Image 1 (cartoon, protein in one colour):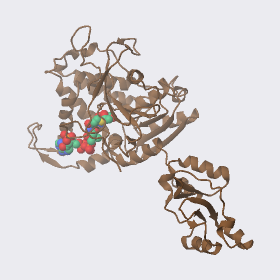
Image 2: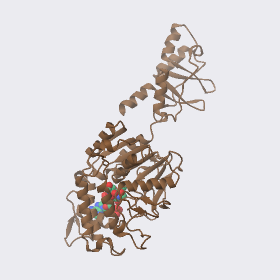
Image 3: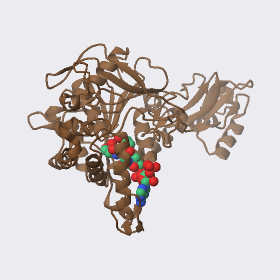
Amino acid sequence: MRGSVGDTTTQYHRLAAPLHLESGAVLHGVTIAYEQYGASPSLGNTILVCHALSGDAHAAGMHRGDKHPGWWDGIIGPGKALDTDRYCIIATNVIGGCKGSTGPASINPETGAPYGTDFPVVTIRDMVAAQHQFLIERGITELYAVVGGSMGGMQALTWSVTFPGFARRVVAIAAAGYSTPMHIAFGAVGRAAIMTDPAWKGGRYPANERPDHGLSLARMIAHITYLSDQSMHKKFGRTLQEKTEYGYGFETEFSVESYLKHQGSSFVQRFDPNSYLYITKAIDYYDLTRNGSLSEGFANADAKFLILSVSTDWLYPPYLSEEIVLALNSTGKDVQYTEVMSGYGHDGFLLEDDQMNYLIGRFLTPLTVADIMIRDPPAICSCATIRATAQAMIEREVNHLPVLHPDGTLEGIVTSWDIAKAVAGEHLMLAEIMTRDVICVSAADTLREAARILDQHHISALPVVESGRVVGMLTSEQLSNMAERN
Ligand SMILES: CC(=O)SCCNC(=O)CCNC(=O)[C@H](O)C(C)(C)COP(=O)(O)OP(=O)(O)OC[C@H]1O[C@@H](n2cnc3c(N)ncnc32)[C@H](O)[C@@H]1OP(=O)(O)O
Ligand SMILES: N[C@@H](CCO)C(=O)O
């Protein structure tokens, strides 16, 4: 059953060590805002969640008083892909951001005033370096996985090359190996909207006179790129809607106009204009190629990868994910790829919960015997005759029967081939011919392990045993059916 992580709060960690940035600048006293959900961190059970451009550390659960849960609540929680019953999930706000981690709106310790545009340039590598330092200072020396969409996917991929092996699995959704000229173009237009707002004042605006108009316009433009032609037809059509509080004096306006204005005006409530400049610039600088080659860029990466794209994403189209997959394949990396069929466009990674849960969950938590075994399978008593055993097999249409002691514990196993031999050898009682050394599995074993056992012993069925009792059967036929479906 999928559930919620419940009420959550953002916490703050001050980095003990200075943070050395790619530009050569050094930041002292950096704060990292984070949230943590689920199991307590132990070696190798921690999953780091990286957010996109406008996200934050509040990835799941409810903040008291809010009307929406965290931005990835659909896939973080008990029984979800980022399963808080199994894993410790940590989400941090990026440096350069404005949701609690050090960024341009933070106070510069040297001047006592906000950094503004004195804040040093940050890159995606710097964001990842800050996350790494944060984890190390909290005693987390390896990650089960790092997961993210869009700019979060860029961070996840960057982890694999900056700290090879630290994260054993990487999930990057709706991302790319580098920013394209089109990404940079949209970034430039958004920045121009902010920087041409007279209230921007070279980035030195007071907190109560921010360039909100410019930021709102930047968000409206960017938000179009997160949608798709299909989703806009479906969401808005050509519907006209009454003049709203944002109307420019026209009697009516299109519903899509009203929507974009709402997105723009709600964005200024939660985002700092200078942060927008720094983060979009970090995205523009993002480039994992080396000597123009993504294969070379990923040469040292050491992780298993899941790459996902969204079919109608025209901002990060599937070909950009496919380039990553090709580069990883060319250097022999373990990589799985799926193009998620969705009409939502780029924001599909935030909205396609079912597909994300299935694909990411399957990658992070491999299927176990319990997931596909036949529960409460037919069994036979060791006191049975060969004839009764044969009849039971015919009636239940099985080729294997676990043989139980009268007290219900597993005593042996019998196959239809054993029955054929018993008839030829004129045996009467099952106890004379059953196999007593039974090879079993437990429900928690992975299917990979079960397949290995079947193969190693040249057998085709395994009783699933818990505390001496048979709770299920797993056959090679079920395994091959699974393999065909996948
Ligand atoms: C990883 C990250 O960085 S994500 C961080 C969170 N991300 C964002 O907030 C990004 C901006 N938003 C989005 O990208 C999207 O809204 C998503 C993906 C989060 C949610 O998508 P959806 O569930 O389809 O919501 P939708 O896009 O319809 O937006 C709903 C809002 O628009 C408003 N709205 C919908 N239609 C209209 C309209 N015609 N006129 C005015 N407002 C409208 C709704 O009232 C609602 O407002 P609220 O958010 O204040 O409650
Ligand atoms: N909706 C996402 C889009 C960028 O990936 C965001 O605002 O962060």
